[in-house]
Length: 94
Length: 94
DNA sequence: TTTATCCATTGAAATGTTTCAATGTTTACT
DNA sequence: AGTAAACATTGAAACATTTCAATGGATAAA
Image (cartoon, rainbow over all chains, first blue to last red):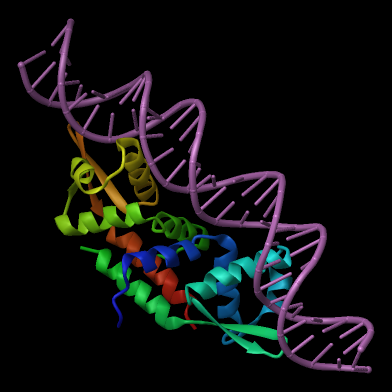
């Protein structure tokens, strides 16, 4: 497992430090594999550019992976990044 | 292990989303048990109120535990909170 | 009790984040 | 080609965070 550097851990922490973004991740989990962008407009009460902004932060840190499908985009959790981040957190412990 | 709620996870993520605070945690790790506040003034190039502000965020989320010792305060990692947070992250995965 | 040390608080400037209306870009459908 | 649908970008307002000088409060030493 890759050893995550503090700068990356900081960015991932920041990406996870917002209620909307945690909600997006729980929606992906709920869908069990892929989440379509349009699904979020139902469950998240924010304007489209705001949701887009949050998705960008999650994809830029590779916490979620986007896949284009015609006009639509679907997202999946990237378990590897979560695991690397968990590894970093384990490393903080005594 | 306690199931951490999203609001708490959000706060812990925020506490971990700053380079100074990650540096403080790595200094605690380096000291291997307790870190004295004064140790940070050597290793972190910020004014005392700034360091105080960061320590407050880490203690308010219970990521670190303070202990008073006369005029001084020493800090230790709270592994339980880290473990609970890791549990939350595991729960995000598919 | 006076003085020094350690940490906390206040208040304000600088910076960063979140949000949305308006608009742009890309793809699909007719 | 023309229109519609899905997502991205821009720019600006509102809000939050970071930083520090100045000051305050508590404990220890002289």
